[in-house]
Image (cartoon, rainbow, N blue to C red):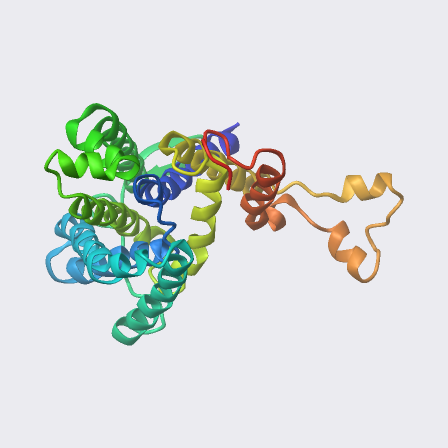
Amino acid sequence: MEIFVFSLFNGVLYGMLLFLMASGLTLIFSMMGVLNFAHASFFMLGAYFAYQIADHVGFWPGLIAAPILVGVFGAAVERYALRPVHRFGHVAELLFTFGLAFVIEEVVQMIWGKVPVPYDVPASLNVTAFAWQGLDYSAYRLFMLLISIGIFVALFFGLTRTRIGLIIRAALTHPHMVASLGHDVPKVFMWTFGIGCALAGVAGVLGGNVLGTEPGMAIQLGPIVFVVIVVGGLGSLGGALIASLLIGILNNMAISYDFSFYPIFAILGVEREADGVLADLVNLTTGGIAPLVPYLLLVLMLIFRPRGLFGTRDV
């Protein structure tokens, strides 16, 4: 029972971290129609900026300043690079953001090197929040969970219950009408892109000291974030939340229980001592295929429900 409870906690935590990244990408896509392949790179920048700031003035200033810096950088990218590319269509936007991801990775390696940096959990939160059945759950993980929930609530009410949220949503579908009301639509898009990047920066600040801050972190998590928004439904914030939690919990459960597939092969008459490829298959466990779980879910979703769980358009 204790394994289930802590696997569930860790799965929810990992899922909420994915949501922090996916929420920014969902915001950008649903409001602007831009699928940003460099989104995970802004997550990486958040972690590196937070590490640099924490190294001089501590974690807490970094928690505030790093996402702001990432958001301002994202807004500048939209204003001076993505906006001129926009008139050439979505393919040009995809290619631009794809190239931007590699540029950011190379710049990060030039500045901070190719090895992980010592970005650690703050001492004030590196304590046990609670213990159950001999297993400890850290205060920092609980802090990450609370921040993630708070951001979801703020985003949901900000986009659905405020005047600013109404303007942002209307600017995508009726830009000329919004402009005729006196609103600067290009500026709305710029800051929407910036806020989406800042959300990825928050995920980097919170996740960098748990997952490790190194140049490959964007490549590791980037594809999973796209799985989240496809499974949840393109442009659906609630769908991104459900898909993030689903993927996080399934992934952690597969690793924690680590069931063997041998009983299935035994029914088929395959011996455990089989040779060659069969030997690898016979000894396969759920922990071994855990990294494949998100992508298997993606394939099934594209086959049976291309618009995702809560999406309104097909992929």
